[in-house]
Length: 525
Image (cartoon, rainbow, N blue to C red; front, side, top):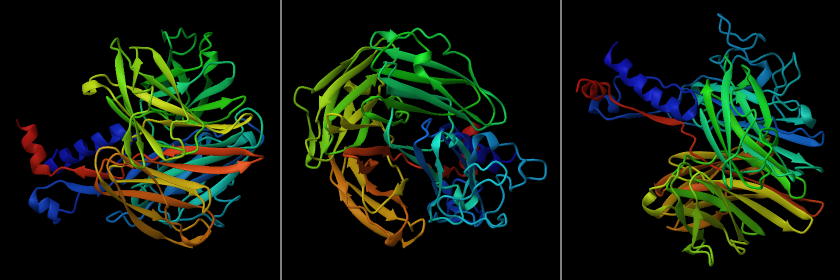
């Protein structure tokens, strides 16, 4: 095996560990990076995303959106396709899937007859009538819509020019019933471990953990539940099989007889890999998706708590036997402050702790910053946020987020009802925000912003000129930081403030590929 191959395997393996699967190509032998011996930063050339089944409600109206930003240095060809999970299959020997369409490495220029994109009928599969999204060009999002409880989970791959920064989102509005409101979740990569603080097995909640398997072999999953007194006894939480290319919703309350308001869910994949997300539905306060928390850490940031939040409930968990006293600070528009009465919060090892923080933001943008002493005890955390009063409240969740190291994107934005919240808790930062073309028309716009250290800013994000449809907002860190961001979508229906919040983790669309000679010298030691 030659030295270049060794270095590429090392780079691709490291990337695959954090994105589910990915691939990169070798840098041009004549490039500056190769000549100088420095690492080359290259666009990812293949990646995958999984979207859970949106809803079990017949009243649900779901919009799927797919987008890839324009990336310098990306391949000129490629595809980005999302299909219903049950329709997935391994490519045949000739490179096509069983439904006769291009395989995962097909060109976006090779379109099916009548392959016109638009809302309602965007990219419908001809054989099963299931929604499918196929991108036509970087920089322009596409959408498809599905109504009722039959909207499927989606599994997809992107390669070539679409792979770097590929993002997908599903947004669902449920007019009435359990979980009524606006529910949004960004589609995620497959992985082997997930933490979800903020779930519940209480009678007032209907919480599902959605498991989606993108592969040709079955995945085997264990689900652990932790309550206020430690691990809950479960009956069927071990060895759950998720069939190939399928999605499996598991009702948490069927896993244990214990009814607890605040539960931390730990998903561990024994065999294979899955995508995972919790759908939390409440009888009184609507519902939303709870994405996985960032990896356990001694320092966590929960970005973008809405300024008009009427109640904020923090749920935190640390595994093992060590207790921790978390230092709590709020990154406000004027800087870091300590909430009165909640300066520190005690979390016992192996037990889920919950704290009511009230109307924490008091009419201003805010993000929570949690710190363990010396960062010695790793913690996962999320907040449940309420907006509205009395019987007209709606809920959403914000987990601890990863920083926007280079670039991140939020989809389904509209000219009204979109709030982009950005925080830089440790140092001044400069960001660039690009509004893409609209799904039905509009010219991209870009603005730069300065975020002061320790603050959270609800920025006035750009809107495409002549916007028609929805659009993507891409955030790029230009200097300083680290930067954390979230996006809130909001509307009012029948006096109820529908809303959903999605943190913006880095899209991990670029990877540093070390120089071959440097890698070999390490291997020879």
